[in-house]
Length: 260
Length: 334
Image 1: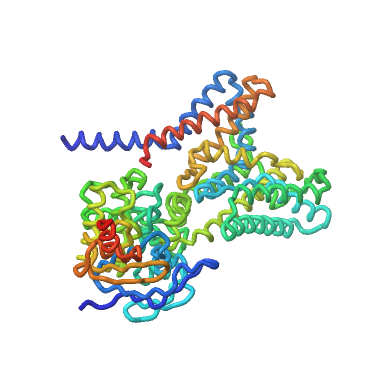
Image 2: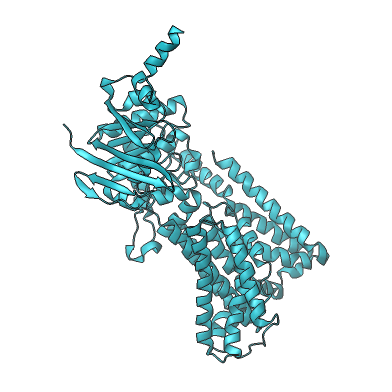
C-alpha cells in the first residue's frame, strides 16, 4: 500500500453565517488520482481553496506525510509541494509560456538585487523548452509565445506541466476539462494519467462523472459541506455515484418511474 | 528548404513581429506626425521650438512612466495632476512662509506624496474599491488641500538658486538647444522603467498581476504589496514632476497640473499599454509622451485655431487607440 501524502482532519470553514465546510476528513495517497465530486455548493471548491491557501481554514488539521502543517497563504501551499491549477485562472494570458512556467519562481542573475534582479532569459528559455518537450506536448510550442495565442487544452497542459516541473507532491486540478473540446479533454485526461505515472498525487475536481471513471482511482463525494462517501472506482458504478451526489437512491427513483 | 532561406524566413517573421508590436505602430505615427508638422511649418523643428517641447516633456513624461507600470498592473491613478500641484505648494509654503530649510521642506513634501500613494494603494487593495473611485476622491482631496492651504493664490516666486534647483531644473546648452536637467531625469527614469518592466523579476510580477491577478497570487506573487508600491511610486514621481515644474518657472500654483491626469493616461495608452492591464510598454509611453507634446505644440504652429485644438488632439488619440485595438485583435486568440 502506498504511503499517505496528504491528510485532512475535520476541516471547517465558514463565510459569514454560511458553513461551507462542516467537517471534512479525507486522505490522498502517493501516486493516486482522487476525484472530488459533488453538486454545486457541496463545498468542493472551498475544500481545495483551503488546501491551496486561498481561504485559510477556521478549524481542523492538515498533515503532509504525517506531519501537521499550517497553510495560510498560497506561498505556504506551494512550499509544501501542493500545486493547484485553478479553473481558468492559473495562467496570465498576456505573458509568454516561459514566463508563465516560472511565474513566482523566476530564475534570476544577481539575485542580491531582490525584486529588481534581472531574469535569466537563457535559463528561462532553455528550461521552458526542455519542460515542454519532456511533458510531451505534441504540437511544437514557442516558449516565447504569449499564452493568449494557445487553445484551452494547451493552456491546461501548460498549467499542469508547470505543477509537474516543480516536483509537486500533490497536484490539485479544479475542473480541468471545463470549456474544452472533446479531443482537448482527452488530451488533459491522458495528461492526468501521465502525472500519476510520474508519481504525483492528483486531486481532481469535476462535474463530469464520466471523466471520473476514466482517470480516477478513488472517488470522494461531498454534499452540503461534508464528505458523505468514499469509493474505489473498481467497486462502484456511475449510478451509485450519482445517487451519492444527489443524496437520493437513483436506481430506486428509476425503478419507481418504470412502475408508474 | 535551404538554411539560408530558413534564416530569411525567421528574420522575416521577427520583422513582422516588430511591425505588429504596439510600440512600432506608435513610433511610425509619431514620425508621420512630426514630418507633417514640419512640412507645414518649418519652424516646428527649429532649435527654439524643440527646446520648448523638451522643457515640458519630462514633467508629464515622468508621471507617464510611473502610470505605465501602474496601468500594467491593472490600476490607474487620477490624482497625479493634483499631487503635481500639492507637492510643490507644501514645499514652497514651508520654505517661504515657515522658513524651513529647502532640503527639509523637500523631504516633508516627499513624505506627503508617499502617504497619498500609500492611502490610494491600501484602499484599492485591502478594501477592494476600484482605483477609479479611490483616486478620483483623492484628486478632490489633494486639489482641495492645495487650494485651501494657499487660499487659492499662487505662491511668491522662488528665485534662490541652490543645489536642489540645479538638480531638478537646471538648464544647459547643447549646441543650439537650451535643455533642462529634467530631461536627464526623464531619460534615466525611462531606462529604469523599461528595465524593470521587461527584464526584472518585478516586471514579470507586474505584468502577471495586470494580466490575471488570481493566477499571480496563486503562484505566491505578493500582488497587493506590488500594487501599493506602484501607487506610492506614482505619487512620488508626480510630486517630483511638480517640483521640477515649480523650480523651472520659479513658482508653485495650487491649480498647476489641472487635467494632467487624463493627458498622462492618454500618453500611456497611445503608447500601446493596455488600459485593462497585463500589457505595458515603457518605450511606447516615451513615444506617446513625445507624440502628445508634439501634437499640442505642432497644432498651434500649423495655425489650427486655438479653440479647435482639442478636436485634433482627441481625434489623434482615438486613431491611435483604434490602431492598437486592431493590432491586438490580429494577434490574440481569446
